[in-house]
Length: 107
Image (cartoon, rainbow, N blue to C red):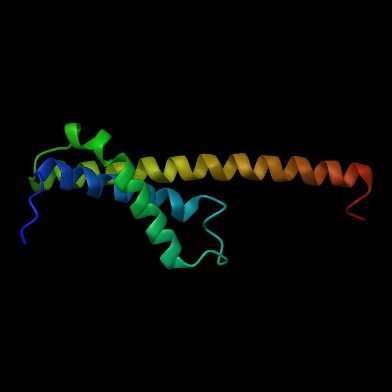
């Protein structure tokens, strides 16, 4: 059984997987030890499958230089998105803690 894939689809999947893995590594609901590593990898792979068709048309050719640059760009993009979600979750948690302190629930 042979499975034929276009190289742009494979490169697009790799780029999407790098971005989703970087995002899940930092994103607050998933970066806790309560979520097993296997679940995080599965979730990143599922999200990469879902967005591969949007990245595949603009994927670089299979030469080392542009591919490594694209992988680093995707990793930085995923880290930036994860950090943004982390900051938003921290702000919401801080606001909730401040409300609890004002009301007297945290005493």
